[in-house]
Length: 202
Length: 223
Image (cartoon, each protein chain N blue to C red):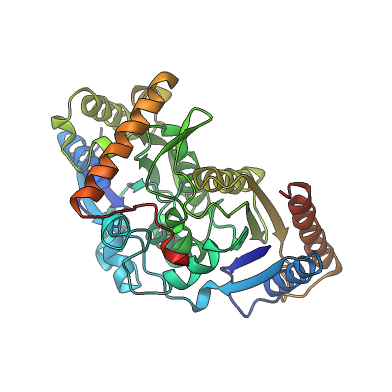
């Protein structure tokens, strides 16, 4: 199984980097091949809703940027894991720049599922959609719930059957990795692995 | 009622589509109440990697900010999140104690899909010490397609009515009433979902056929 990890946090920050490394180690030990994409390094132009991906280059964004490189990896991944700072109870702009192109993982057609209109999956391979939200202080339960709702909506609309939203509280003093933070990273990694194993489709 | 100055920001990458249609309609309501409104599109700032000076100037003179956004991938579009991050990080003082009214619209006929975006606008208001006046979600905007609300019949009239009710409350410094949201909820009986899906798929097939596209569902990125 292949997992693509979308890292939208700044490269110099220790905790997200540590959390991603820890998660990659865990995934590797469980037979999952992880690949990290640092979005900070990627040029992704905003979706212009031009419908070029519908009838000029079907299934592909017409813009000349790094979208194709990232979506090629996502198209081959059973697992998509996004690391984002929780901004206003949702994704950061750094993550959203690629999430806006996720529509290309689905077809432009509509299907009815559970009484709702949805887009069928284009590649039929994505099984897990996981968001790891990072925050420092002063975040409400409502904001975390909103991120959870957003994760669910993205998964449902892309016909990805399993989704999960987990959060990690970051240290706010000198970026030091406290024992509590390390434990939290360890717990979140274990939670993600358990979630995948529990829902694994043979 | 004292005249107010109002800043309207549209969050769409297409400056003349549905978010602008909504903005223009609200601007008309505002001007009918002897107040003023300026409409700005997020892309002007986004392309320059900085919040436009004209937006900051307008915000400084405004008592109310209205953000009108489409739904991209179930949430606020990337350029709008960028703008909100910029405003909160670099222009927090300008926003303090100003009122914020949010409107989110999506193509799918389910207004509830806008909840995450509207919640985030509320969290943005809280973070910037603004006064949240409430939000409206609209589903079914695919059928508006940038046309004047006055020209699209009953659904357009309902939208205008909801905007009038909302603005009336905001001018009285009251949160918008649930009545405004109730007016624009489209209730589609489940029995119609499949025919709607069929209609939308026919439109896509027709459009693709017109452009000679053989397979719109092609797995382009792994060919």
